[in-house]
Image (tube, rainbow, N blue to C red; front, side, top):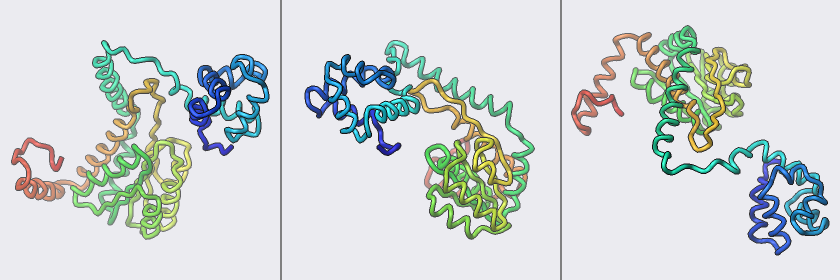
Length: 293
């Protein structure tokens, strides 16, 4: 069996579509995955009320070499995603308050953690490079990182800067290949091991670009970039809630954008005024509304 195949999903299918004995065996396995991952074939057969050959045939039908291989893949699946299999049920009468507290509290905690640890000297150095760059490339792959790359683009073009963001791996590599010493590349990756992002930073640095990574310390991306802005994500114990760390990464984007704007100085205001003016014709003409948002 290939490591990428989901053994639990395959067992669930047999629990619905197998023979009577196979359905009984699959249901028993799903009821106590941790037990089955450690039990002997005799104990598994006895608890399921089937024969030992049935257990062996079942394991092979799932694509495993035998019961030992099946238990290995089962234990591996539990180690990776076991927390998501039997989550505590939601209490409906407390749901609204708990959701509000969890999301808002998590966001505030993430921001406060960033505030106490971020290196503003590094932010200032990044802003200095961006403010004098001929072009800026912003890279990110996956969920949060690609959104942050797009958000940095959204913030920097308003300052009159030539900036592009890419989440497609081929475009990242191609644009990195035409980078110059007047290019600044900023790469976002929570893990620090996204192949296209790591490769693109390596390629662009080879051609003389300034490279910045917002990523985990010690990661492949951190080692490739010239400037590292460390970003670590603590595991979130609430399985129903998106990880709050993205609020901290969004704050990093805002720190870079604001520090860059101040590094450029008052000349950015004319571009912002023009954006406000052009949008007043199609939006509600209220000066209190956020610019372009």
